Image 1 (tube, one colour):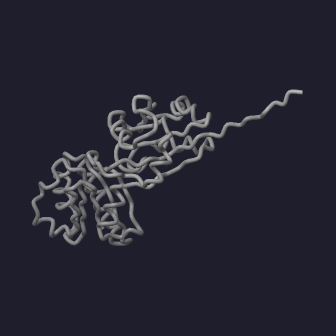
Image 2 (spheres, helix red, strand yellow; image 1 turned 30 degrees about the vertical axis):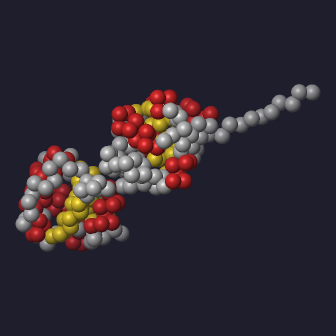
Image 3 (cartoon, one colour; image 1 turned 120 degrees about the vertical axis):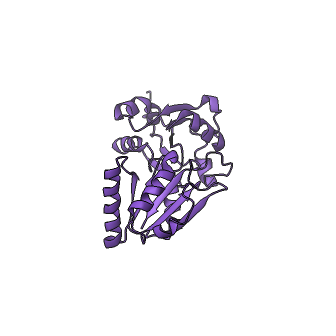
Length: 243
């Protein structure tokens, strides 16, 4: 009599892996036990292949870099594409999801991969790492219990002014902190607009080059910002907060 073994292969996990905010950093950006946990991963969803390869090199994975299998993932990635690429996870292989900077899915693409994993009962493992949004909020002195990250402000000047005035009203009525970002080459222009539009007593915090050696976090009233050199943010990655 031949005994047939019913071997059921467990699905792999989806690891959400942080990356350095400062791309040239040589510091270890993961907790040591997390770094050990992901060493066997050889399948990755990434935002940009070139940037991802530099990050993966720092992770010192067991698999040689040239044998790592990378799938690009962006804001246009569809569930059908993920379904086509993620096949090995059903054979027990773990996958990693990495963004270009900071935490995956926080002001970065990747949420569709996580959404797919939830739909298919794939275990998700978020790892601890840096986030410029939360680091700046921590260091701002602003309300960290009622805050909203709003991404980019409108390009249109009229819409931008309306939005900022609306935020300012909510700051007064709800003590809410608003957090936003801008394309680095437009930072100085935005700073000038904030000073022109916001009330003098509104507090503005700007955090730039977070985790880098020249990191700077400045938090003060708009009236005091008017006394500053308004070209200090030229092409630097920035987080803007108002409260």
